[in-house]
Image 1 (cartoon, rainbow, N blue to C red):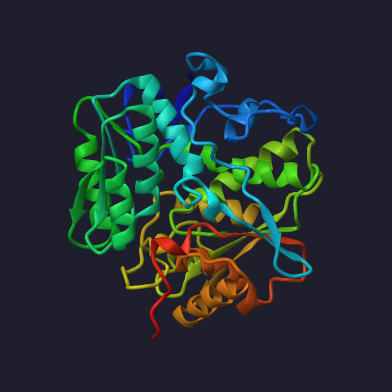
Image 2 (image 1 turned 90 degrees about the vertical axis):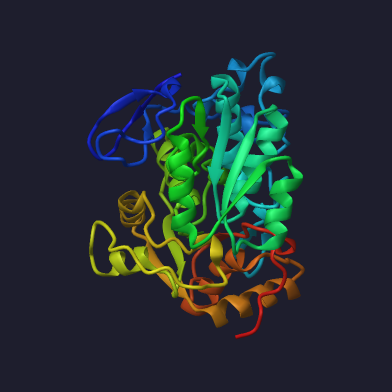
Length: 373
């Protein structure tokens, strides 16, 4: 295994230490890891999960007991691309095992935790990440507790409980839930499966781009439109783009276009103000609960990633989210409101001119149809 490294102050820590954040500045960790190139022509016949890209992953499946099949997996990944317009294609990540893209990172955290053998695993979430962690911990035989806001969608709460995780319902917003989980994370023998602070999660979400690259025959679209709350999919996508470019496997980097809800948009506000960091926003009710993050810990990294690719930020209103969810459903694709936000941005901001891939991140069965305004 490699080391954690703080991107802000350079502090290092062995990954076996259970330290979930930098002890000096309390920021999230990066991973001191260099991916090896993945040969497009070697992928035929490989396992049908994200472990097929093991050269690019910090936890190679070969390190697991019994080789590749011994690694924790629910057959995640390999989600299809479906054309929506002449230039816009959707990647159907709501078809993952727990019905959201968070499975990409959760499988990495569960496999990592399985090797560390903690007393228990804890996670905090607005719903989807908690469900994924609960499911993959169940698969790995790990004791798991998930902290969620008390107002989380009942279907998501039910799904987490069904996987056998203990639930802690926290009064207040998403930030209050994170604070409660972080207090528990400081106990001895606890592995904090944080999809925000732990960089193994980002190395799982980067497989989203590796799959697009594979399915498009070794190329990427001109634009990747991505939701931005805590930025786990966006930062994973940026990791993959940089790796593929560094290895000469793509010629041009796609622009990363990030989407926030207008109700909670600290990243978009900072980006358009030319700032390197955010001023934390006020929590506000929004249909897109998965990206309603007033103070994302990786804000500086998210802003830098979007700028580095010549991308931008867009916001969408509640009415635009509702309309986008219904429009996708009319096309046969029923996703939750957060998952419809990127499609809403394409319609609202005219992003369809260049070749574009948009993620549909969570299934509509988790939330139902958004209520009218």
